[in-house]
Length: 117
Ligand code: AMP
Image 1 (cartoon, rainbow, N blue to C red):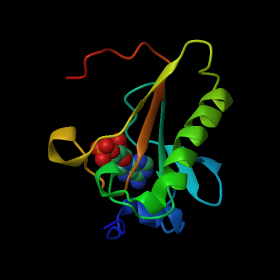
Image 2: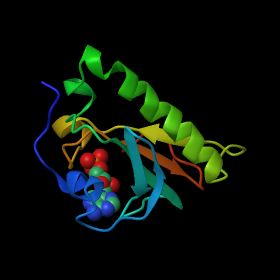
Image 3: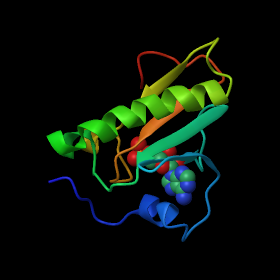
């Protein structure tokens, strides 16, 4: 199963609710997180409503690669390259996922602690 139900991210893709979009391609959209936990906090999503990495299928291989490449490009755009940054995907209950449309969090602009809480 890779198709997800509609979520708030679907509404952003369809421009039904506003978002500060920082990157868009045919398959990927990225926008600033509404509740940032770092000076730079960008949500990078596939336009296809895959629920999470756990729901991705072999046919989603290209999309998964495009998400990571988009993160690299956005990080360069945001000037994060020299100091570094973190890419995180929360999956399911224990992962702390709250929006059930696959997304990568791109976090930077401060030192990001490890391990996560
Ligand atoms: P997660 O908890 O990993 O599922 O991440 C969902 C993220 O989406 C959270 O960091 C939220 O702050 C963010 N978020 C929820 N609604 C919006 C929105 N309308 N615009 C931008 N970011 C959002």
